[in-house]
Length: 362
Ligand code: F6P
Image 1 (spheres, rainbow, N blue to C red):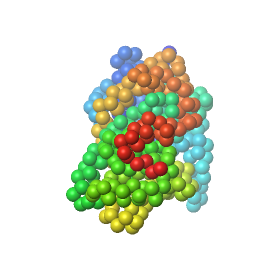
Image 2: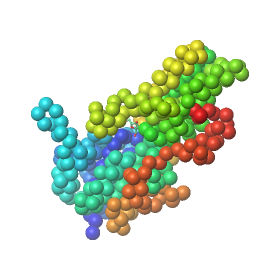
Image 3: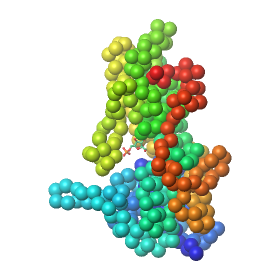
């Protein structure tokens, strides 16, 4: 019999996390009379802890429209490979026993883990270690399989689209090219959808290695036709054919996680130097993750939260909630963490972009 549940948010924050926290809390308390505890700062709150707060109806009042996560998060605290200070440096250690013990100390009977691929991988391993876990897939990147879409993504696409609208007017006034670098890691979902919605002239995706000669020829061709400004959307994970990803930090310098960034400036510099068009690079960065969630993400987050509680009630542990068509269903965590959801270079979205005259780097 379930009497108490715990919830944590792990990995990078994203709009809609508070909708999930509120959904879980309300569904657990109102209909079932369970108690709910929130674990603070992702798995860090169970590694060092337990550090928790009680989640009551009062505590989750007014958070639906807020970005971020009221529980805090961390994308560094993998308990199976945790950096522990040793002498002058750090050693990566398995501290998962501590997490399992601290989870039991919270008095909760089950744990809702809200996160992207890294966090859900940890959730699956903890489930194997006897912590009854239900997962909730989140990420602005939309790169998780097993669900039609993740919450947070819709808001990010909206933010980028609005930015593109704004950049159009300044690019037009100054007769410039503007290269806009967007997030998404190794998936080009934000780039392709926001690029179409924001009427980009060129969209470069991680899934289609781009040819910079073709990109420059396309922009040069536009100029010949009389177009005096150009908007180029570049996914942070986009790679030139035969080239390498551009990174700010390599994985070995950043707790095993590569930090992407910089391709926008590389593309902008090349366009300016080859074509003589005044070009600016804009990196939207964490603006894409912050702030108010869209109505879509508030609804999806709420539905995911409510469904997670249902799965706990049904004893469906080791599963995650997912959107399939218009329904929220139960899905396997394995599917989400074992394969990455990427844009199909020959799929409808890319073909739509090309049919609209948008160049995709090939
Ligand atoms: O996964 C979400 C995401 O925002 C990616 O799009 C981006 O590459 C990464 O996180 C940035 O991570 P951090 O917040 O650690 O800089």
